[in-house]
Image: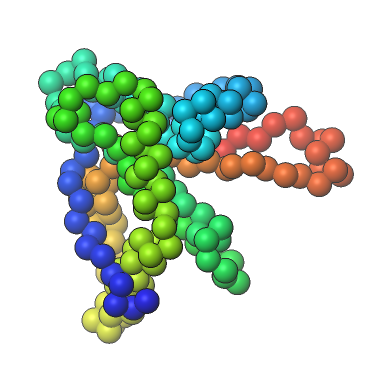
Amino acid sequence: EKKAGQKRKESRAWHLKGERLPDRGLSYITFTLDSGLLHSKAKELGVTVNEYVSAVIIEVLYGIQRRGLSRKEIKLSVPVNMRRYFATDTLRNFSLYANVGINPRYGEYDFPTIAREISAMLRYKLQPKQMTAQMASNVAGEKAAAVRAVPLFIKRIVLSTVYLTASENQFTTNYSGLGVIRLTDAMEKHITGLCFM
C-alpha cells in the first residue's frame, strides 16, 4: 500500500544516565527462569509473555526514573517478526519495531496498569494496517530517486547520523527475544541452553 505511509515523528523518550564502560566494553547479565511460571503470571493479567516481559522492563525503568526529577516518557522498542504476519520468501531481516511505553506525567503506575497499557499498545501497533503503513514509509525512503542517486558511502554517514540523533531519541531502550526455540531431536540432546546477546 504505497500511499499508506505514516509520519515517523515521535516524542523524545527518557534516557538512562550512567558511566561508560572502559574501552567501549560491553557487560552482560544472564539469568534463567521457569517459563511455565512466566507464562502463568502473564496469563493472570490477560497478556502474552512478550507483553509481560515488556511491562517488567518498563516497570524497572520507571522505578529508576522515580529516583530522579525527570518524568519524560519511558519507551521500549520491541522488534516484530513480520514473517508471522506477512508471507515472504525473503532471506533478509524482515522486522519492524513498535515503540510502546508509559508517560509518568499522567500520574502513578502500578504493574498491572503498565502491563494492560503495553498490551493494548502492542495489539494496536501489530494490526496489519498499522504495520503496512510503517513499511510503506520505510520503502518510500528507499525508492526515492534522489536517495538512490546518492553514493552508498554518503548514505551510510547520513543514516548513522539520523539514527543517533533521531531514532535512538524515540526510545529508552530496546528488547529482543528469541521466542520459543524448537530443535530437532538430534540437536536437542547436545544443547543445554541458548543465550541471545
